[in-house]
Image (cartoon, rainbow, N blue to C red; front, top):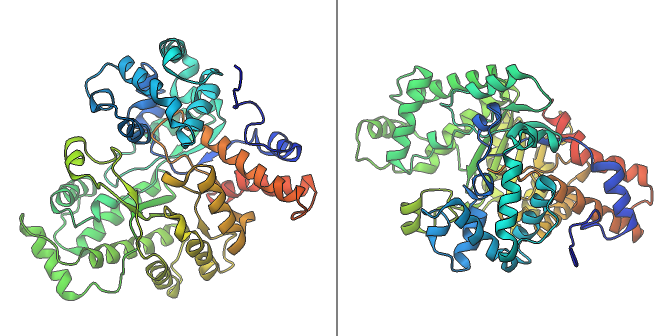
Length: 467
């Protein structure tokens, strides 16, 4: 197609970049240690009905764009047919130019379906039908898609009460792609939402077998589930927070208030931060005991649009970058764990680019020689998993930490079509290194630099997660 930019050398601005990418990192397997794929879809080798089913359902990135372009909710999350929803998206894709959606959309069409065209209104129905025919074939079931991208490890995101039956099912199947759970206890921490919090505790009680009447029994129930997750292969936790809360402010009075809070359906808890900080700190001590990696995704403001959030629910596209103070609470939280030598491997993800240097410089405070790159500045995520966001994260990490120890990219996605984000990242980092090689800022030694890039793209994560 004339002017089609997504060729073999997309994002690779020099022959040096092309060599680094094609000869060193292109064909490496993928360790996707954090995503939001549905475990049942993987374990049952699910097949999707059409492009909307696999591509648009649940994708709040695309939903936000469509709303911005004036598309009614009927064609986004409403009752329009799947084909109508896809055509509504396709018609607007040309107007996403310079947004990362433009790159991701066409990389996904190209890499999954072999469609080397720009998507637009004129070819929407044709592409919908061509991709739909492929989705009917075993080559495009979930496990086949993962294998086509050489995905070696998938880390799903799972709540404490999940049965993990699909992880056991997948483990019994064997195969080249392994799926492991990640422990995500947010709903059992967020006491600022009393109704949802208490519903979560009921589910935690049911699965743990522990009646929760105070903080001690809550921690017992959570420990029960950490043990269960560990027995089922989990070695990673994850937390989605605006900031790390203080852990030292949980007083005897607040502990007593929690007992009363549990008994009163109408109660509001007076100090959510103190409660969350205390319980989270105790969880982090458990993670260290079990030898897990802990992840903290920090910085967003969630559910900003009250009206539409009530109508459509969470994760519908109404979140944005926050400007919370991160430096001092993060340092204090990690230090409290480190004082007692209970700080496990930790990945800190930042969503506000203004805070990149804060996070990049934080690592050196708590890297203690016990593990290579023990404390990590996680990859650009959510609003920052695009070219500029990735480059800014990589530069901050290079300047204030050691990029050679970086554990690389994640999809952080709900879509099986999102694995080209690893390719996107690999192309960007190869181009970044090559540019500095060509300027004389890095050694013009292809094998040396290529080896570092291989570590970042694959081997560092393989070692870090012992997979």
